[in-house]
Length: 404
Image 1 (cartoon, rainbow, N blue to C red):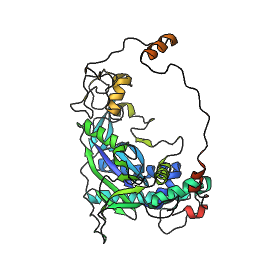
Image 2 (image 1 turned 90 degrees about the vertical axis):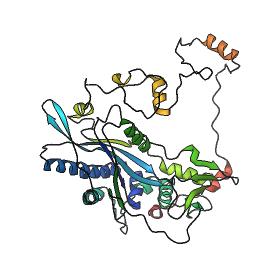
Image 3 (image 1 turned 135 degrees about the vertical axis):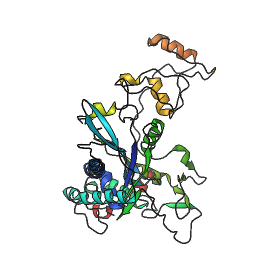
Image 4 (image 1 turned 60 degrees about the vertical axis):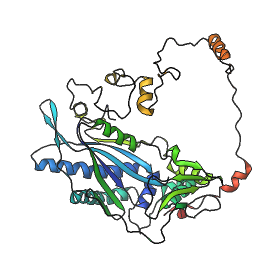
């Protein structure tokens, strides 16, 4: 994304959170999710175009990449959007393009954009049979009709409750210095607006020359639901989840039975063939100016091959593979996982490819010398679940009780 999508221009991160009822609907209906993202993009990019028009820039075009995150910090179903928006617009300048940075934002601007998003939503929700209101009754629940078990898991996850087992319907267990009384909610920052369950934050802006910061934000938005070091087994066979930040009531950890943890992960799994990375405006796949926009800021018409700072410190200069549009396997492992597979674990030197051995007899001889198995293991027959596990899964609940 940093190498082949965003040009060298300022990029602002917009984070849009949604009401609980809408989170549940968007967790199943990806078409509705894309439509809601489209409303947010229309409001945000339209605001940037109007600002540019006020300064004399005609036909300004912005662009953005939206990452749909399905999870919250407590492994709960929390559909929200991280929108990486170029902080300005492009205009045509002969055969090239020119970037016009946006003016600084304040709380009134954020509030105006959030109000515009809310104004765009009602007709979109009506076309999909959904409603963002807290007191309305939804006439249709496709998730409950097509997958009632999933609907029960998702509804409980959105509410922070348990769906299966003996504790079905109860709150997730908490640990920490729990406060006896409710604490005062935190005040909004200068780049944040909140109204009727919607929350829009735009306080993070990356300068044009800080590609390392842009990569860190992209990695953060594309992270998995939970890191391994946040999970641990307790002496009672439960799973303790450490929160990234303490909650306002003092909660620092959550406790799950193994089945409770699995149900949370099942609710976070998207449906097949669902794209959670969406491109908008001048960064869209079929945008007329895309080829000019992504090369903006370079001198020879190709993407830059290096920055003054990188997110992953590389032990040796990598090959110039970005000009070809792809990476070598070793470079990809070093860039994505910070794992240098070409570093010798014994001497610390650099490994290099000498030959590829694919003759079966030679492979078997090498494996035998290393005391490794030389025979391909056979496929084992499928095994059914233990009988006692069936008692943990009650019959599917009716669709009406799956709704929030």
